[in-house]
Image (tube, rainbow, N blue to C red; front, side):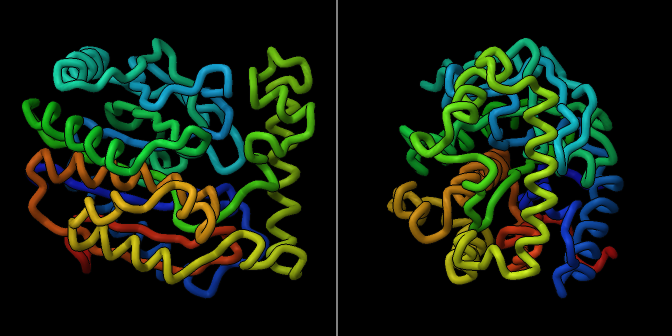
Length: 325
C-alpha cells in the first residue's frame, strides 16, 4: 500500500485509441501506462482529484468559468472517451469549495458536471473506469480567451492541495492534457469557426446547428480522417505545432518542481510555439502544485515521445516507483 499523495500527469488524445498507425515508441508508452495502473491498484486511493479542460462537451462559450468543481458528474462517450457516472464524494467537494473561498478563490460548481475524453480517458485507462474510485473533477477554462495566467493556475493548485491535505487517506492527483499540439481542425479557435460550428461551441445543441449526436459523429469522423492524414502526409508535424524542445523543457519544470519557472510564459507565447492544445498544461501545473502543497515529497519522473501519429507530443510524469512493470 502506498502512503501519502501521488501524482500522475498524462497526455490525452482521441488518436491515442484511434491512431491509423502506432508510433514507434508505443510499446514503451504502454508499458509505462501499465506500470502506473499497477501502482494505482497497489495505492488504492481514497480519492482522485483530476484537473482537465473540456472540448465544448460540458462548457460552451456561454458558460466558461475559469475554475469549476463538480459535485456530481458524468462522462459522455465521445471519441477517445468513455461514458459513465463519476463517483464524486459530494461532501469532500463541497468542503473543498468552502476552503478555496476562504483563501481567496471563488470556483464555480456544478451539480452535474458533463465531461469528455479530457477527463474520462485517463480515468478509464489508469483507474479501470470513470467510476472506479471516488473522484473530484476540476475543470480549468484554459483553452479560450481571456486566457488564465499560469501563476494563477499554480496558486489555485496550491490552494487545492493545502485544503485536501487536511483529509484522511490517500489522494491521487491527475493532470490531463498536452503536450504540444494544435487541434484547430476539430475545435476551431474563437473567431475562426464556421457559423454552424460556432453555434454549437457557443451553446451546445441549444445553438440549433447540431444535435449532440451529430456533433459527436462529426468529431468521430473527423478524427478518423485526421489519423489517416497524419500518416499519409496531408497533415504534418508543423501543422500540429509539434515541438519536442518545448515539451522537454516543460517536462523538466515538472520534474524539478520549480513550477514558478513557468509564471513568466504567456499563454499567447505558448500557443505560438506549441499550439493551443499546449494550454492544457495548466492541468499539469495545477495537479503538480496541489501534490506539492499536500506534502508530496517524491519528484516525478517522465517519459516522452513526439508522437505524430497521436497528433501531439505525448508525455507522462508520475511519482510512483519505476521498475514495477
